[in-house]
Image 1 (spheres, rainbow, N blue to C red):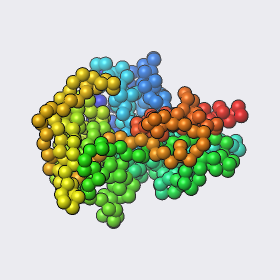
Image 2: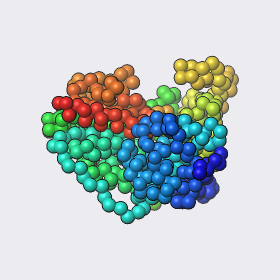
Image 3: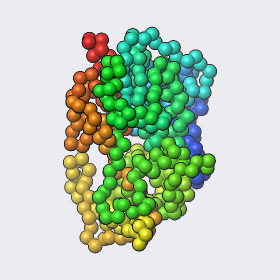
Image 4: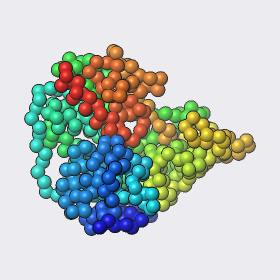
Length: 461
């Protein structure tokens, strides 16, 4: 019988005043009893809107039914029919705007906690004794994947299951892309990412690190090495800035650099000598998930005051509500309807403040959000010694500038058709390299489409 409670089963968390001083995971996960109780809230709808709401079309009611039965390993196998990274997705997907956003239970009350259940199932599998997946029989065809982020890992995993010999070329010294350099440890522990990647290696995927494509090898050279198709999932790692006076001052970071130093280069650990400015007062400019991540990291590094400076109101803020809620609990201070105009520095070039102007909201702009308008005479200076710009990223031009026949739009994003094929024969692309900075699950969805397209292309070749 369905559990008709209007509320989700709460997931245990660290106390805010404890967790804002450490980098351990904030959310502690469901127990088996909690998972079964929450799973009984699913009505197993006939039309399954949650499946259509998932970019990789996980069979959500089916895996939840297995959780109700206590068959957690079976639930894991059901999820992995469609997703190569369930432990990741259960933690960082914006379920509230996707699968849970269309859940029938959300009409009167809270939707089923699909993300929490996915996380539980994946963690149960990782912490249990089980056989490694069998490497599929090779079909003799080689495919290259550029970039070991969510899109590339998904494409590689799906192709490996079909028998392709897949090699991933990764620019960094470790695989994972934004999962390891962008998302903090307290939201996504790196051991989780590495275990997911180990599962792909068990399927036969080869990962070559320190391979900056466009420098070490070109796309054309990869093709000449016998790879019959190439997928580009190189992400969007080029940070954007405001172009205001003072941005070259000492103490100004892009969020990309700041988070990479903390996450990939382990600046938060005592045994690492990663250079990073541990400031007393920091302004983070932006209102997305990356801004929340940067602000919460800065707090954990010991900053007394961390401000989110955002030019619109809380209602227009693009970050996940859960991330905003956690940030507020942890003592992050929100300066809303404020727009930076100048970074103030001393005679030695070190940041001493951020000059802002107060804003008010006018009519909606092209994005549908109300346009911020400066309030005359409302300028003020926020007393900070560091500024982090979390304004989004765009694709690095290295691959497209070294590959003949591949085209990009004016934003530098690779142009693809509905099958994720680029303008170059046998070359496909997906994720942030195509869309610009977006979500992990959308990148995975693109990798999945590309894998299907590459399979069809090579079968018909």
